[in-house]
Image: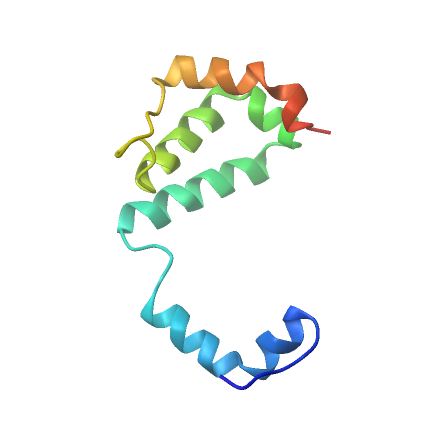
Length: 100
């Protein structure tokens, strides 16, 4: 890749072919379940009016937890809470999340 000075977007544009080749060789969704779960989470988030509405939705938080599992969260040293405890814990931190 050539060295380009300036904002990151300038570097991205100048080296787009190399970035694209890297992305194609190293896709972020290594497992099919990752992409499907990710798209479900984003789709439901878009259906709900605000981030705060999303965090009030049991369905959204359950799908979010499934997405985290698809990404491998909870499969190593980190533990992912059971759905009801996960929802409760997320909601306990609403002020820290700062939803509009």
